[in-house]
Image 1: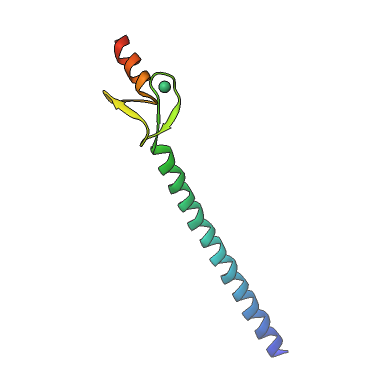
Image 2: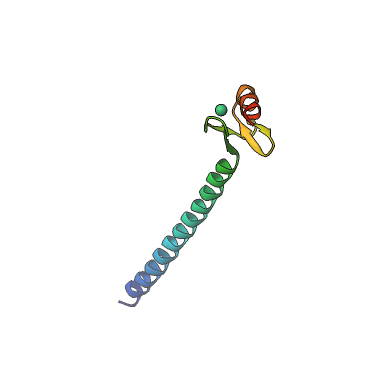
Amino acid sequence: MGIIRLITVVAVIWLVWFFFKRFQQNLINRKQAAVKSNNTVSSVKKCAECGVHVPESEALEHNGLYYCSASHKKSSSSNK
Ligand SMILES: [Zn+2]
Protein backbone atom coordinates (compact mmCIF):
# COMPACT_ATOMS: atom_id res chain seq x y z
CA MET A 1 0.00 0.00 0.00
CA GLY A 2 2.89 2.32 0.79
CA ILE A 3 4.31 2.24 -2.74
CA ILE A 4 0.90 2.96 -4.36
CA ARG A 5 0.44 5.97 -2.06
CA LEU A 6 3.93 7.20 -2.90
CA ILE A 7 3.29 6.83 -6.64
CA THR A 8 -0.01 8.69 -6.29
CA VAL A 9 1.67 11.55 -4.39
CA VAL A 10 4.47 11.78 -6.99
CA ALA A 11 1.92 11.70 -9.83
CA VAL A 12 -0.12 14.51 -8.24
CA ILE A 13 3.02 16.62 -7.68
CA TRP A 14 4.11 15.98 -11.29
CA LEU A 15 0.64 16.93 -12.61
CA VAL A 16 0.60 20.17 -10.60
CA TRP A 17 4.11 21.01 -11.83
CA PHE A 18 3.15 20.12 -15.43
CA PHE A 19 0.06 22.36 -15.43
CA PHE A 20 1.96 25.17 -13.67
CA LYS A 21 4.62 25.07 -16.39
CA ARG A 22 1.95 25.08 -19.11
CA PHE A 23 0.16 28.01 -17.43
CA GLN A 24 3.46 29.90 -17.19
CA GLN A 25 4.19 29.24 -20.90
CA ASN A 26 0.70 30.49 -21.80
CA LEU A 27 1.34 33.74 -19.92
CA ILE A 28 4.68 34.21 -21.70
CA ASN A 29 3.06 33.53 -25.10
CA ARG A 30 0.28 36.03 -24.34
CA LYS A 31 2.80 38.69 -23.31
CA GLN A 32 4.81 38.13 -26.49
CA ALA A 33 1.63 38.31 -28.60
CA ALA A 34 0.61 41.55 -26.87
CA VAL A 35 4.04 43.06 -27.51
CA LYS A 36 3.85 42.01 -31.16
CA SER A 37 0.38 43.52 -31.66
CA ASN A 38 1.48 46.74 -29.91
CA ASN A 39 4.41 47.00 -32.31
CA THR A 40 2.17 46.66 -35.36
CA VAL A 41 -0.27 49.27 -34.02
CA SER A 42 2.50 51.79 -33.36
CA SER A 43 4.01 51.27 -36.82
CA VAL A 44 0.73 52.09 -38.64
CA LYS A 45 -0.14 55.72 -39.35
CA LYS A 46 -3.49 57.19 -40.32
CA CYS A 47 -3.67 59.41 -43.39
CA ALA A 48 -4.72 62.92 -42.30
CA GLU A 49 -6.56 63.40 -45.62
CA CYS A 50 -8.56 60.21 -46.25
CA GLY A 51 -8.12 58.26 -42.96
CA VAL A 52 -6.53 55.21 -44.56
CA HIS A 53 -4.08 53.34 -42.31
CA VAL A 54 -0.65 52.91 -43.86
CA PRO A 55 2.57 51.39 -42.46
CA GLU A 56 4.89 54.02 -41.01
CA SER A 57 7.59 53.07 -43.54
CA GLU A 58 5.20 53.92 -46.43
CA ALA A 59 3.55 56.95 -44.82
CA LEU A 60 4.61 60.47 -45.85
CA GLU A 61 5.12 62.82 -42.92
CA HIS A 62 4.43 66.55 -43.11
CA ASN A 63 4.14 68.94 -40.15
CA GLY A 64 3.61 66.01 -37.75
CA LEU A 65 0.79 64.55 -39.87
CA TYR A 66 0.96 61.40 -41.97
CA TYR A 67 -0.39 60.85 -45.48
CA CYS A 68 -0.90 57.74 -47.59
CA SER A 69 0.29 59.33 -50.83
CA ALA A 70 2.08 62.39 -52.17
CA SER A 71 -1.16 63.70 -53.73
CA HIS A 72 -2.95 63.67 -50.35
CA LYS A 73 0.02 65.36 -48.72
CA LYS A 74 -0.14 68.05 -51.43
CA SER A 75 -3.91 68.59 -51.33
CA SER A 76 -3.90 68.79 -47.52
CA SER A 77 -1.10 71.37 -47.38
CA SER A 78 -2.71 73.46 -50.15
CA ASN A 79 -6.04 73.56 -48.21
CA LYS A 80 -4.40 75.35 -45.31
ZN1 LIG B 1 -4.90 59.46 -48.00
